[in-house]
Amino acid sequence: MDMKKYLFMAAPLAVLLTACGDKKNSGTSSDSTATTAWTPQAPPLPAPDEGKSQTKFSNVIGWPEGKTPVAPEGFVVTEYARDLVNPRWIYVAPNGDVLVAEANTEQKGLKKVGAVLSGKANSQRLGTSANRITLLRDTNKDGKPDAKTTFLEGLNQPFGMLIVGNTFYVANTDGLMSYPYQEGQTKITGAGKKILELPAGGYNNHWTRNLIANADGSKIYISVGSGSNVAEHGMDNEVRRAAILEINPDGTGERIYASGLRNPVGMDWYPGSKTLYTAVNERDELGDELVPDYLTSVKDGAFYGWPYSYYGQHEDPRRKGERPDLVKKALLPDVPLGSHTASLGLAFYDQNAFPAKYHNAAFIGQHGSWNRSALVGYKVVAVPFVDGHPNGKPEDFLTGFVANDKDVYGRPVGVTVMPDGSMLVADDSGNRIWRVAAAK
Image (tube, rainbow, N blue to C red):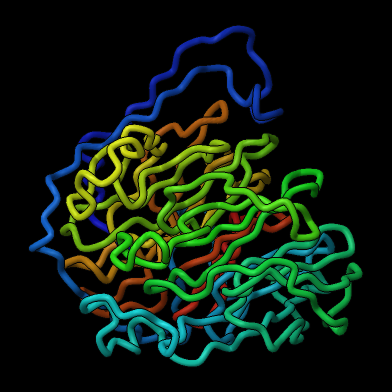
């Protein structure tokens, strides 16, 4: 899915704040993350128009030597790593090692829907996936890695990574793998075990499977995108998909934590809380201005509309009248991120090096559009948070990926906050990782 111009910019996100009892520190638990009650508001949405869906793929031209993305004044952007092969996701180990999942959308495994992929290998980076995890280590703590090793290879489109105790987890597109792990090791040598089968493949880029654990490591959450745009292959194709799954660390006890999330990719906990958030990549082919991607808190047992409705209870005309019960049940997301932006990455800023306005903000990597008449996305945006809730519309944070109306230098995906307070951004099409730090 991709973006649209921020249609909600014409009517900024209304944040309703009313007092609700004794003031407490924000982010201390899921029951006391805020001092105020807050209600999300839907942006104004146009009528759906199936007949005006546009296709405009970007052409990736790569980064000229010395050129970087652009951050606001007061920040410095540098190249953290290059010569990677489609670096899509980043995970920071407890000792500070940076693990990078290098994986790609393999053309052979895709279901081509309409003109979605028609011969656009360059712009969508289709081809052979590296299927490995690379380790980057900054031994002298100068903000630039000086050691690079192959941490794990022979995987099947790896994406989400996670360390819980002495176990390293990686989510392949078809299953969750676990490996013995000791802090500081530079290569996985032990035999892995598939502890959970996952539905493989999917529409466009919905092969990604992300991972996150709760604070005590007793539960693992897995995001699984839909296998289609809007269930055009039938709901039997969507079992355990368009959802966030919850399991025990050994792979047992699976249940659907939340559903109706077309393609939830980025996941993170609001700092100091038990509130899970996700960035959701919404559906295509309803026109330039539909449907907005979104950032939302994820409630246990909640349903978010896909495929029957979008952005709350707006019924999708392609599924009209099929499940009015589920349309009525669909929750309104928290923050619209623009239609066709391909909002994928998500990280809350839980450090102190950035200016105060960014503390606890949600940073979202927008991979960029294909299903819109003009390019949108291709940047990292920041959503401000106050008292545990969103407090305004997304603001541009890392831009400069777009060269002109058809060419782009790269495409941001994963966003990760480092222990030193800097931020890393995975640029899969640019084959680089960028570092954003506050100027000293």
